[in-house]
Figure 1 (cartoon, rainbow, N blue to C red):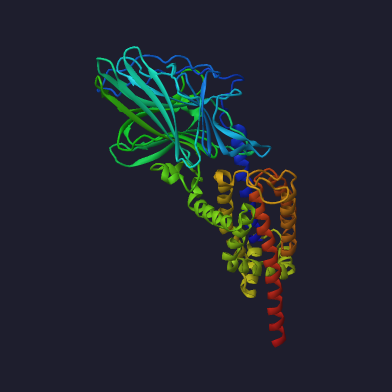
Figure 2: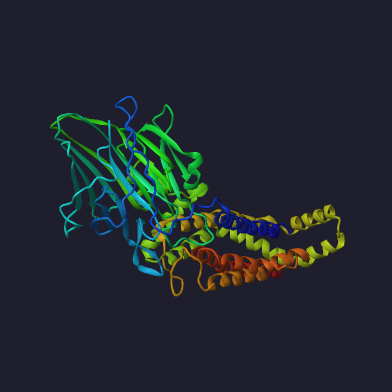
Length: 554
């Protein structure tokens, strides 16, 4: 039976899709194991100033400082930062509005971190013509140990200062703003000596491989470098992603005007966003020791004796919020990746967020989305259920044709086509609703996986995280039961024995499989099944009344 075969193929497509996701999780290139103590990443040399402008710098940075060095803390309404006085590195950044996991709701997620065997920090400084001016060993001083965004204030600045024996003064300023994940890194250089200084600002994201926490099971998520690369001999750009473990083979260093570089991970991004009209050098590669790095080097500037210079490097350190990413920098919305189904996923998220604004509950928003999808496909569903009803009605005749012609499939198919034509129905009419809904289903999968707005979103009762599996497997069981009811309503009289066996085991197989995937996705499919059952019952009753009315007129 053609319609049944199509449904079977589509359902198997769902299974194969999720099997691929599980395979990516289990058999993708293994990540480098995290160390049990704070990793000692060997620093790269201070970046060279662009060739042809100043002599290349050859000085090496010292090894990173111990994580127990003195630190300055900065707290805003959304961030809490720790800055090491030695080197002025941004060593830890907590996102106050995002918990590590549902099990640890009071512990803020640390996006940058150097504790418990993790290493993900922001390093920065000033490269010089002959030697580095600011390094990771530079002993900064701060006027106070803690900064806090005052009530009514729009921003807070943490100022670190270093006075060199040769006469120059270097300041490193971190500027945080209320409600924002954008941070400005500012280097000020005052030349109090008697010779000119040449300085180039640089910033570097250095990390090892680890998961931040709360990662969905059986899913492979991207962790790596994102680069907004200028196309050759062109003013246009393209977005390039490279997994951390592939940087050993795909390292690069590129000089261009504009663009940005970032470390990407599930839900969150740390990016270096220099001015788009200035030349810069970007690099991504393994660190000299353990770990990986993404680096920006700005254009050099000459500072005459008695003069000063100021270098500003904007940063974005936070969640990939859909209503903000496009405004961060040109092309920054590409950090939010829904894959090939982006044209469906983006409007799907817009609908979900609109329903969420109205209801305040992402689970209810998913239910309303399901209702909308089923309403838009009502005419297709009506054709589907009419076809199913007629297939059920003429099941005995179809079974008789199968038995009459046996293995002569050509004559059997010809007889069935004559029956379809005589009775006025098309068995393939039921394919279209599933064909249309399948991309929506997969697109919703990516929305639930990639949208930080739905991270740890609760629905009701025991379903406290729609992006994680149902902890008690209730929803997958309900889904399987609803699928079983649908099969019984549609009837299986016209199916051959093998098809019947496969269709009977399908609800059990998908129930077991759906038990390991996002409860929000299972909620969508379960509600869709319930609506389908109601539509099927209604349309079947309507068809019976129509046939009874026609019979009464004869």
